[in-house]
Amino acid sequence: MTREPAAKPTLKRIAFLSTGAPEAEAARIRLIHAYGNSDPASADVIVALGGDGLMLQTLHRFMGSGKPIYGMNRGSVGFLMNEYREEELEKRINEAEASVIHPLLMVATDTQGESAKACAINEVSVLRQSYQAAKIRICIDRKERLAELVADGVLVATPAGSTAYNLSVDGPILPLDSPLMALTPISAFRPRRWRGALLPDNAHVTLDILEAEKRPVAAVADHFEFRDVAKVEIAMDHATRLVILHDPGHSLDERILREQFGY
Image (cartoon, rainbow, N blue to C red; front, top):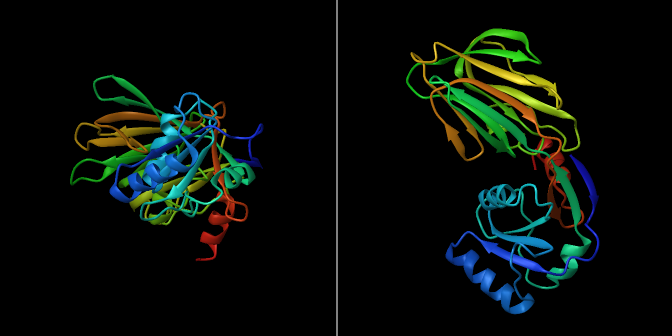
């Protein structure tokens, strides 16, 4: 992740998107009356009105387009969003700080040999599907590092996603500009004291599911789920840049730093 000045030239053509919830949709209509509305394909910037779920959906929708996303909170959590204000929106957008993040690329293969690809901005999770714990072999850059993890699952998180699911299962918070990924177990049973690992962001992670038919496992990349997997491969996609805009003093790396001090 890197932080950059807001994109140039001046961002004038705005496309407004909302969750469709009453509060968010009412805000979108008011903002369109005040600033106009461009087609997303030709807009300079996308303004997303909702919560963090909408921000993730919008980042996925415009992945690879290079369009910056400026979110305003009309949802519940809003960790990725700016404060909602209707005044001087164009000025705020053009003075915003741009955080560039890279997604994870997941390739999952199921027990029938079928494969699926998906990108994750927060994390890729491998989760048990039944009452039985999953058994997972972990390889890093094709070298076995853990012969058998017995757990509810394991996840790989980006720095941007380290304060989400990763943090809730006691994973480490990563500074946004750190060249790292967090590999974190979910309710580990064996080895009981293993708390995960910090990996360089150019590492290739392979998760082999042991006893895959007896102990079925699903792979989840943000909102995409692929069930009955036998192998999951994960690597960071450095070629894809996602740009999030935040008001000065409220950048994503500042918010993540605050999380480490509990406020």
